[in-house]
Image 1: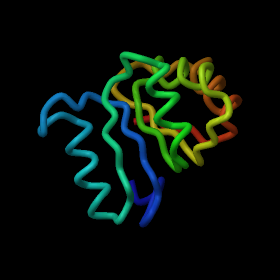
Image 2 (image 1 turned 180 degrees about the vertical axis):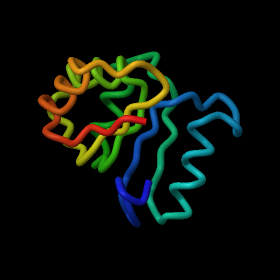
Image 3 (image 1 turned 135 degrees about the vertical axis):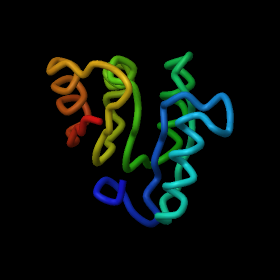
Image 4 (image 1 turned 135 degrees about the horizontal axis):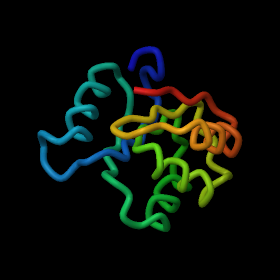
Length: 110
């Protein structure tokens, strides 16, 4: 994660966050140790709520499920993260192209 973000960077985590041992909260703990400002949003159930949360922030990095990040890029083309980390599912070249094209960012795969 040090390659993607650093101290003071706002990081939105759109990964499972239902319990303290879910991917989102565990990743948030690690990001806090780097000095980043993580927000474990959870898996997107409402794109309206996700767009609203992002519009009230200045996200440096987004982490999420490829299909959800692609759809979020289509719903919120004005968000300008520096980079996006896609994880936990198949990552199509079309999803990467849509995300990088809409947001003008680098897209990384995990």
